[in-house]
Length: 354
Image (cartoon, rainbow, N blue to C red):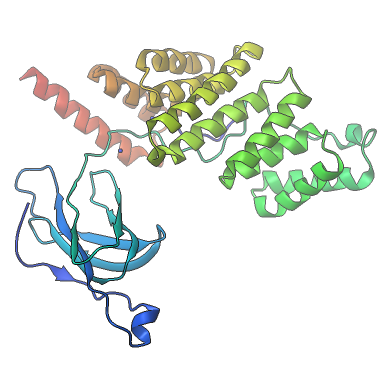
């Protein structure tokens, strides 16, 4: 049915510094820049004294310098030129930080960062949303309406798609939709590949075309809903207003799908994840329970439910969902993560009883 992943964030002295990456200007013998960035990384744990690396990049990915904070959190980057930089901090158990810094003055710019605890969640970002229906390309039927080269290209693309060779399937499908834009199977498969490449607008256009071609099919609407859920995850750093707008698009598509197909378990699952991301936990609970009643094998819904119950602080229900997941899927690749989450929840619930 569907490959899914489910969906449910000081002061001291000695500091070790890494040598800055020489710029082209420096290589030509010009004056070394005198700008710098310094400050403290505050870890909200009493007596936290572990050292860790802080990375400085430009263009969101090009490394410039790295340094090790001391046991009280101080760091410093020196010898920088004017421009925009990003401080990246990754500490286990805390949310990753990507702090923008604009250097246009002189001397050091002081940036202090307070780390936030990572959410207790095991909902994984979407990797594959194939929709609710399994589409089979009937070449004999297509041959009645389309020329041989279109049918042959679609058959080859379908084979490559199901083998996971998306790079080979993509140009074939793009050729097919150019020659036969009304071919539903090609539009929907093209949307799936665009989604895997995070080409959200292209995927959206293909799914909407597929939905127009088959207005009575829930599958392209489910695909659209999955696309918006994934896009919301990818847009988290753009602010709550942007994310909420994308999630509202997801709700619209998914409710359209369940109107056409009320027993679409995958659509109810995605509705649950969407409501979880929107902080409507009771609605999330209802739809996730509905998805499990329709498809008990949809085990990711149990992980999503566990995350919902964490937010609702219903610890016994968290444990029940995690136990059910582990019992049904003892060889899960997430087993260690789920067991660790269960241990933390048990510890927390016991502490509340003391």
